[in-house]
Image: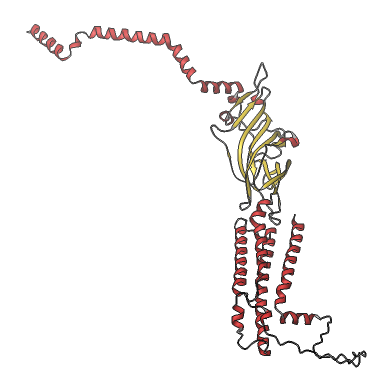
Length: 467
């Protein structure tokens, strides 16, 4: 029974797990294979580690650089020479371009290369050939750099295409060159009292934000040669001068700070505004004078010409004002435009006066009977320039009979004035006014000379004062 029972159990186990009978050899083979794999791993382990390190060359280079400069051995949260004298930081700037100058926003946009020079002995390293090492922005974040910022800046950014435009160069003795390419938009307080014949003086100001003059001393690296510019061409301005300067700024809470200035003087090109503003204004004023040569009875022609010139001048003034900031003082272009508008407006008023005096004059002639009864004054005033003064039937002077036998009177006392004789004498101001009012066509004759002469005099004074 026991033998049968044991045979039955073996049969059952062989059917349930066929490899159970071979378990001993199986485990021995598995153990042998494992030992072979571990042996192969130990044999080729150094080769695998080398391949991994070689594939991650950037990380290994950065680690070697940090070890060379002993980044982990120092606290770069503090400035070099902390607790001692102020660290000198030299600055030089190369202006790449002045991108825009906005009169409406009173600011300018400039792209420049800003370079810092200082010495940090903590970054000194041994070198057999005394050559510098150059790094990018990844190492800049781990060391101390000057916290220079732009005073009165509205917007600024560091260019980051294709990588951040930052360069760090470290020399073996610890001298450092830190260069960055920046575009900054800064405020420029402009004076438009002489616009567009103006000259603007703008400046870009650099200063340390955290370190006052006791900790950090900013200075121009090479004096006046520290500011270099490429060839800069602007659409509306000519750059007269580019120079650096320095000074101090005081803050009541933190003290005195070194401040560097990039000063540049801009003179505006006038030709653009001559074409867009001054020449059209001059032509509109001259066009308004054409009405002085149109017959005073041509009401539709003279009125439409006057209204057209007035509306055109209003459009020019509105267009210039829309492109300028809303300042509280009068600009030079405003003086010229409004004076020209006044000349155009006076030409319309001149015709209103001529029209009114002509109506009164012809009403008086009708009352004296010097005009035919069939003459209609209203029709004549509305007539389109074909009615003239010589068409009015005036009563001629009576002829004086001449007696050839009678000698002329030689005694002035006995001489009697005869009808038809006119004596010429100097008129008084009142007589001249009455003469003009009784002869309205004379106003047009005077206006043909007075208006151009007055406008020419105004232009001479204006351009002599603002040029």
